[in-house]
Image 1 (cartoon, rainbow, N blue to C red):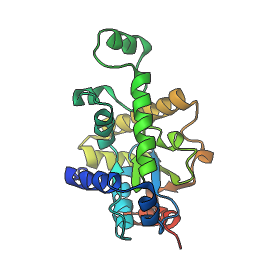
Image 2: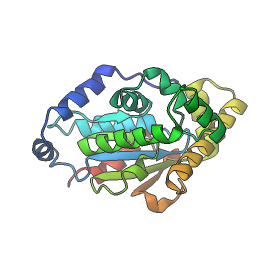
Image 3: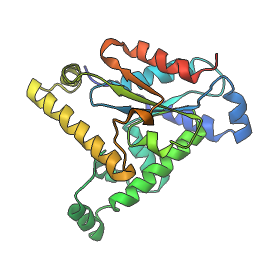
Length: 233
């Protein structure tokens, strides 16, 4: 099993629809939503991307005002485009914290901007997308960047280690040991990222409106639960 490839036209349609409206028009179009953006924080293998796409499809089907879009790996490309940076820098933007020595050396040599600069660019883009609305933002501390925005719903996706390892084995074609190492290493990296930039524990349940254990939920069931907090009754 591999992650679905989403055509770029889908994101272009979203951006064109949102940038083509005034704030007043956007508010009128979004009257059916209690929240107009969702952040998904996740443990590795908790299926944030497929759940995010199921959620976006469900909310897009409500109609009016254009589609919802998921920003996950493509978020990095959007950040670089927003700040007129070359796409080759994408490989220097892991969801982790680089060593201070390596980061300073790369900045000094002009290989890439500092981690702090790239984080500021990330925060700017995530905040802007959340303000535009109709987005599902996966990872990169989105729940903390937008924590002061009442229009944003914050969700944490969790699951048992063994189930998440099985999922990543299928998704990446890894063996048992390789998948387990990948899951644990990724979880530690994401924890470091949030702690370094926000001085917060990514596992703190008080930072989320909803915490879902995906072990016993299908993608559609999880998306339906989240959508219930987004849509007006």
